[in-house]
Length: 169
Image (tube, rainbow, N blue to C red; front, side, top):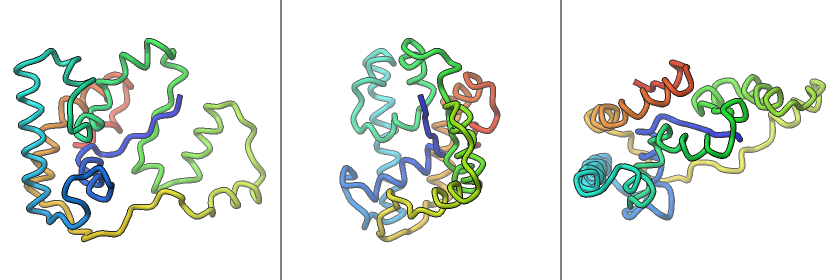
């Protein structure tokens, strides 16, 4: 099983380019800050009233919990042995595509491609590009707030994978 992870704060922010985001791509950085606080408060209310597992599996808006990667591992590991799970950090994939693609090939026990075929694959246009929008960067205070919120979930992922790259702090 292949899983991709990105900084959960960035993951939540990128949802404003998706049709599922209530305010859409025109949301300002200040508007996103309010949205982030609202969904975290809604999450905390869920935890006060329900078991954590219930909140993980039924919480809405789902975009917040999708960044809590470690919370999904118990379900995955119930069906896949840990050695059949490869987690790819999107930031590393973006910086060194060739290396990460070869990691996937190795994990899947596929033969390595000759340079010409590898180059042809790596130079293909990306199919899933970020949609255009205001592109307003996240406020520093919002990033700090979300980083603090996601810190225990990132620490759990780091511990599960025994890999400090997944800390995002």
